Amino acid sequence: SESSSMKKLYETLADYVMQKGMIEESDREMYEYAFQITAEAGLFVLFCFLMALHMHMLVEGLLFFIIFVPLRSYAGGLHMDTFKACFLLSCLAFSGVLLLARYIEIPGCFSFLVLLSLEFTIYWLYPVENKNREVDREENAWFKRKLRSFLLLDFFLALACLAFYKERYLLLMGATFLLIAISMIIAKAK
Image (cartoon, rainbow, N blue to C red; front, side):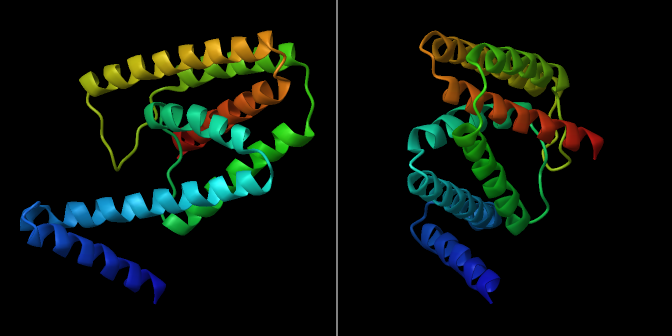
């Protein structure tokens, strides 16, 4: 099956780095998992890049990742149980945000206000706990500082978009923030 062939690939990669003396046998499982996560994330990014290219929305796709990745990393949110579910939902979310930015027109001032309210919402919703990654008080404080920094950077990016009449980018940023907020709410409800 495809799943077992991929598992075999991760095992082969771990064997290779072990033979080169780069890792110990005790770290093997961790490296196999790292290879799996890297391959899955790479597949998702490649698929999204090709989708954005096909839609002639490469800048918007890059903007989505510039906003989404740091915020999702530090704010937390919904985690799916399988790669297939995660991949499908993530691709639908990515394409949904791009389609909103393409076909919906909202005045920049309104998008900016919505984005600003979503920034406060995301900050207020933090932290979102995950059973797979427990965070102590010190890590939590560090994550919150990082989240605050990225929210501030995004605020200034949104101000620049507003000043230069980039309504499409503002709408895309707002939709991305909404996606993160919804993911956080669902994760908290779980």
